[in-house]
Length: 155
Ligand code: SME
Image 1 (cartoon, protein in one colour):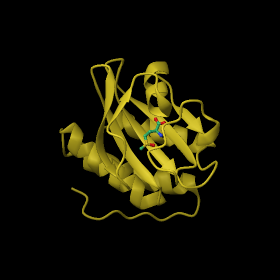
Image 2: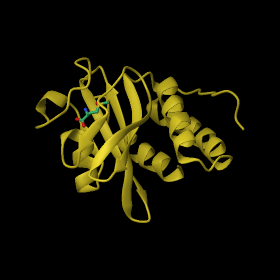
Image 3: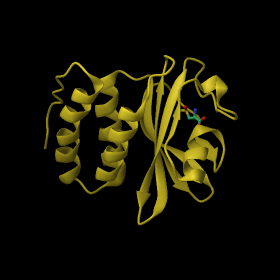
Image 4: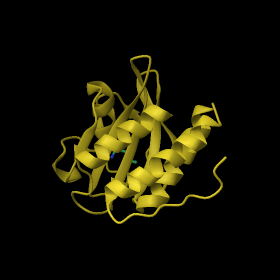
């Protein structure tokens, strides 16, 4: 089991490249999904210093707050609501450069300015979403989408 996160790299891509094998090493030793979500949220949060990094799990017709790092957050989100519920309903990653311009965005924190939400699939079904918020505009791009989609596949 990895005992300490070591991330070197100037660019976002270099940091994700350094992070990926360390996430693999943590997840391959553990088969509990909640435990793995907790460590993945912590590792992403520590590496990039995001405002909020965490998971919502699908429970019936709602998303329910799961392991996260950052300030307290909304506990339940209905399918199709907000950025998270949209990622679930559309089964597609949502990259939001300015949350104020996203119709129906749910403001758990007024400091959040941009956001990315990546669905987590199991056997073709969305079972959770990875939600990351930044306190700056336009933090997330195709590089984040590419690597975060790989990271949720490892879970
Ligand atoms: N902004 C999200 C809600 C979750 S919080 O950002 C942690 C949304 O619109 O779905």
